[in-house]
Length: 459
Image (tube, rainbow, N blue to C red; front, side):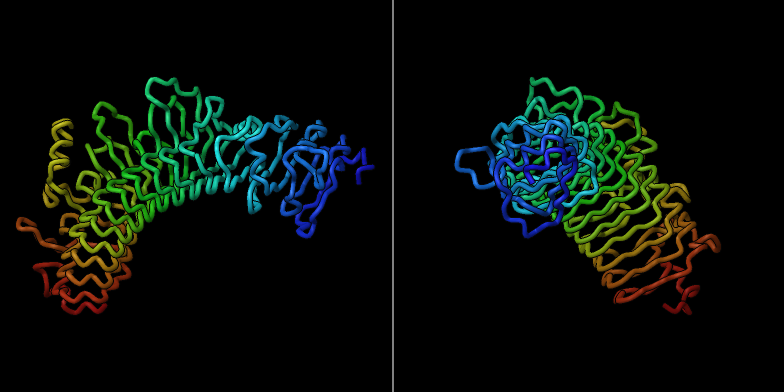
C-alpha cells in the first residue's frame, strides 16, 4: 500500500480485525485527502522511533493535503506530546483517544477517555474547531478553561462524564481577564457523575457566552447547589436535572434591577431524584415574560419539596400544558409559599409590587390567572397533598382535559373550598374528559362543600 502515492482516499472504517499497519506506509501516501479509520486499527504509536513496529501519529505530518480524518488512538500519551500534522486544515474529523470509538453525526468531533490534563497544543487546536466534544474520566480536569487560547467557539455539543476533579464547568479567576468569546455556538450540554462539581459557572464571562445553549442535562452531580445564574440561560429550551443529591434550588435570582424576562424560551423542565430540593425558584419574583414558553414540567422523587411554584410564579406560567408530579412525599400544595428567613430576605430586597405578588393568598388571586392552558395534570404518590387547588384556581383551568391522581393517601378533596369562596354553578373544569382517581384512601369529596353535586361520579 505504501506504493499508492497518488491515493486520495483510504477507507478502512469498521475493519475491526486490523491489528497492524507497518511504519512509514501511511506517510508515503502524500496525496491523501481523506483517511477514514474509525472502528478500525487503534494501536498507533505516539512518535516515530527506530524500532517501531506500528504506524505512528507523527506520520500525519507528511499528509499536508489531508482534510478528512476519522481515527481511533488507544494510547492516551499522544495528548500530552506535541505531534505535527495537518490539524488546522481538517474540515471533517472524528478523533477518539482511549478505549472506545464514538460514532458521531457531527462534522467535527473528539472523544477523550482516561486521559490526564493538560493537553498538547495540537489538541487545543482541534478543541477550538470541534463541533462535538466528549470527555470521560479525565484526571486533572478542574474546568474547561484550561488555556487562554481555548474558546470552543465551534462547539455545539458537549458531554462530560466521570471527571471527578471538575469543580466548575467554566471558571475565570478574580482579577483575571476573561476570554473575549466563550461557547458562542454551544447548543447542548450533558454532565454526568461529576462528584465535585460545585457551580456551573464561576467568575465573569463575556457578553454572548452560552447565548445559543438550548439543552442542558445534569445528572449525579452531588455537590451542585443550584444550576447557574438564570440570566445565563436566556435561550435554553430544555433542562433536565436528576440524581443531584446536594441540589437545594434549581434557579436563584436576586437582582431586582433587571427587567428583562428570564428563561423566556424554556419549554421543558424535568426534575428527578433531587433529595435536598426545597424550591424550584428561589429569590425575587421573576420579571414579566419569564417562563413564557414553558409547556412541560415533570417533578419526581423530590422528597423535601413542599410546593411546586409560588402563587406569583403560577400566574407567569401561562403556556404550561403538561404538569406531572410523582413521589414527592412531603408536598403539601401545588401552589404555595414557605415563609422563612430566606423568603423574608428576598422580600426585603424586592420592590413593593413584587412583595405583594409573592405574599398574596391563593383565594385572593383573580380568577383565570393560573395555568389557563394546562391540558394534562398527573399526580402520583404525593401523600402530603390534602387537595390540589382552591375553587378560584380551578375555575381558571379552562383547557384541562385529563386529570389523574393515583395513590395519594392524604388526599381528602380535589378542589378545596376556602373560607370566603363563593360556590359557582358554572365554569368549573369545562373541558375535562378523562378523570382517574385511584388509591385515594381519605377522599371524601371532589369539590369540598358541594358533595351532592358529584355523588354519582364514577371513576
